Amino acid sequence: MKSVIVEEPCYYRVRRSQILYFQREIARWIKRFGLKDWRICHDVQHDEECFARTHIDVLGRVATVVLSSPWADPVTRKQLRRTAFHEAGEILFARLAWLAKEIDEETHAVVRRLESAFLEE
Ligand SMILES: [Zn+2]
Image (cartoon, rainbow, N blue to C red; front, side, top):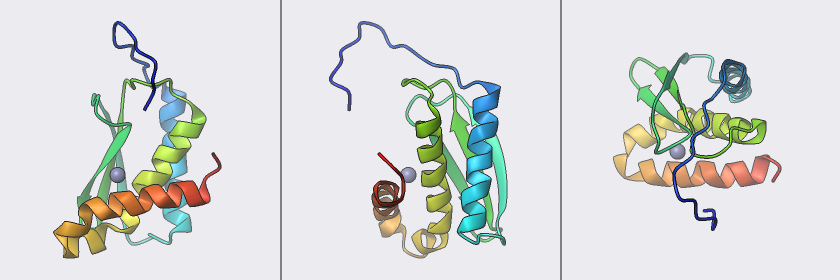
């Protein structure tokens, strides 16, 4: 969390080139994680609570990755890359999370650990 206090919220629109970069990063990790049997869909929606979220249809093996725009933080390649890794990680663990609803939050936490382990700071 940032310690800077701002008077009014400031939002940063995610540009088209950044959306495409994010989607390429998703595709890269999906390939590296070997998730060839999943169909990945993309969308962009207004959501101020997160950088992105992924809707999972476990039985159909369809994941819809929804990138948020605008962001409350500046849109950087580093954060786009990190967000893409995170969402791909959630798809990787989606079936496990589905098998035990209780580990859904833990999945999010484990993916966070992977971010720190695999991505540069
Ligand atoms: Zn998450």
